[in-house]
Amino acid sequence: MIHLKELSTKTNGFDLSRIGLGTMRLAADQQAGVDTIHAALDAGVNFLNTADFYGHGISEMIIKEALKSRRREDVFISVKFGGLISPDGKFYGIDSRPEHVKSFLAYTLKRLGTDYVDLYQPARIDPHIPVEDTIGAVADMVKAGYVKSIGISEVDGATLRKANAVHPISLVEVRYSLMDRHIEDDLLPTARELGVGVVGFAVLLAGLIGGSAQQQKLSTMRHLSSSALTNINNNLSATEGLEAIAREKGITLAQLAIAWVLTQGDDIIALVGSRTVDQINDSLKAIHVNLTKNDLERMEQLIPKAQATSSYMLDMNLDKNGLFI
Image (tube, rainbow, N blue to C red; front, side):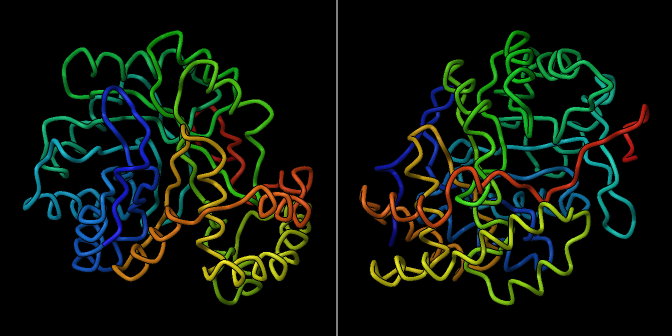
């Protein structure tokens, strides 16, 4: 059995495992989701990441079911709020208006079956609403005892600084991988200056690293600009060299990618989106991968930092109502 206690980062006095479980994909099979969470917890993972819009709330209910046989205080639950999802499951905007925070939280607490969440954060910041107002509303929930700590997601260094001035930010959740290193010049140094931990998601570039049918996945991605597509294809062309390194170490390409994120600092948690027991157990093996200086230099040569700056994610261009334009 793999245990993660020897590698952890501390947030508000809570020792967090360096690998966290993202639960977005668990809604497809609820029993498999419960089993996956149990396997993660048994292996030492204590950081569960969800959102009120994952599976239209089903993800939170799966966590509730999984924790019925576990001690609530042993698990750190991070929740994002404000994502607007249409009936067909498409993400179409954000609602981070301060007056709606307590309502979002009330439904989350009900679905989770708990009276508090360990970390609460807006899924994105609406550029038309001051971040100070949104974080201030979450801070009110901290004072009321429903939230233990505050996070923030997908922001730049200046926005993180503004948010932290209102209430200490414990964690910032952001895309980070060998093929997407955009945070290293601005957000990451700011977070470290402020003592804010980093939760890196999309560490496998939404399954493109180490997954099968990479080009087919690319072809189905919406909102992919031509420049982003070019950069991603350039990065993926280097995977043959990365696979060679992985084979030398007796690991998978996915494990290599997760291990790379973990080597970037003890203050970084790698979030994995496993949806089966086998997948989470496979991902957790990355915790014991030792990347040497030579390994890291070879990986840097294959995918230089300057090349790893593209993003295929949605551009958060919102109108006055928080809808995509």
